[in-house]
Length: 293
Image (cartoon, rainbow, N blue to C red; front, side):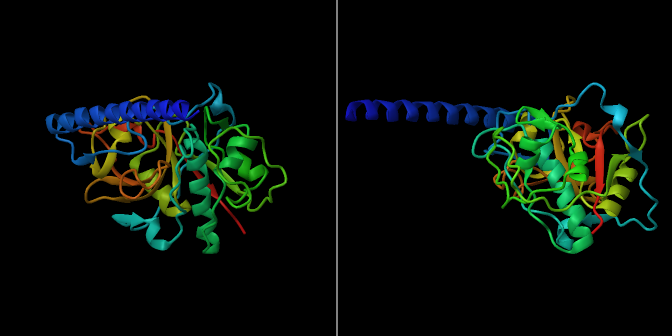
């Protein structure tokens, strides 16, 4: 029995070592690439090194029920904004803990709704992404899309009602339902992507906005600085934008990769690449939500 246990531990140690070496090789390759391409950010060991698919999935007929709204004009829109300074942004979470789950869509949706509630009440609730994974029709651990319609029809569980377990467990129908969304919609116009100005106005008006982005190996290994790789074009992730800085042309992104990712879970990314296109397609699709007490 002891020998069997020793052999099992030895095999586990070898597997962990091999995994660590693989991550080390990826980081080394990315650091070399950073020098060659002039990246302005640090790459390193994060929970997402080596992953490039974080859970965005969208049905082919999604536009049928979609509602677009061009955000209202804002006089003297500030050159710099960060909703964290106003205390309306919820905690950083990790969609892949304790195991990997492609639930970025649930985390991005919950992050925006937490901000919308806090904007009206002054209190940031800790909303349960697990509720969306387990109870909504918008997705699973295999991926999904913006799920604000669920909050409008059903209301939100808190994390304390339905803790996150990163798995497609059964819906906890006994959990208390709390705030409902009053309305939600996509930023801009159905015929085109939202502009940078429209995204800024939406963030300023509604609070943190959930957006799609094309994450990549460099994105998953981001440790800090201004992300400017802009090297991916396949939309596969949902995050929340909580602010911007016009001086360096960046968005402030709240991710769902834990606090070991980026700058305590956040990322500063260029809004556009050298050709004027959205960096990694960030904000090609963006959604806002409103809560009325």
